[in-house]
Image (cartoon, rainbow, N blue to C red; front, top):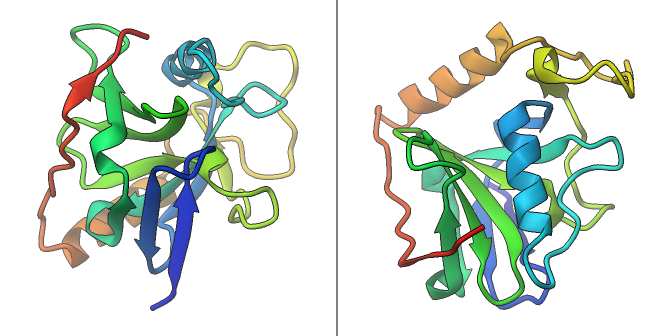
Length: 177
């Protein structure tokens, strides 16, 4: 299996990714746009949103993600106390690292961890129903109103392959974002 190495902007947090990504997508939902806006407002944070305004993710099974350096620098935040998702940044440079759904068996890694020439090709956009009318979404990939059947199929087959496990990713500290 191939191994991919990605890191935060300053290089103090490094991830080792084994195998192929499950899905390569941009999310158009209100929550992801709000989360990306908050991350970008952190001191020294890099650009999170694409030029269009979506948030780019590369989804990996949790059992194929290893923090090879800097796991102690991870910081989490939630949009609200009731949020079912947590967003995690590298505390050293406020680079976005991942979004995690409560009870999920995968991590949505932020596309900004990859250099432009190594980022896997975009396969789809999700949650297009949340997208404002302007600017219009391009038609270069499918723009699904919600998560598509193929999206859920990929998540389900990965979970079966994992033996229905949901590994925990520990993050020691929180931030106010």
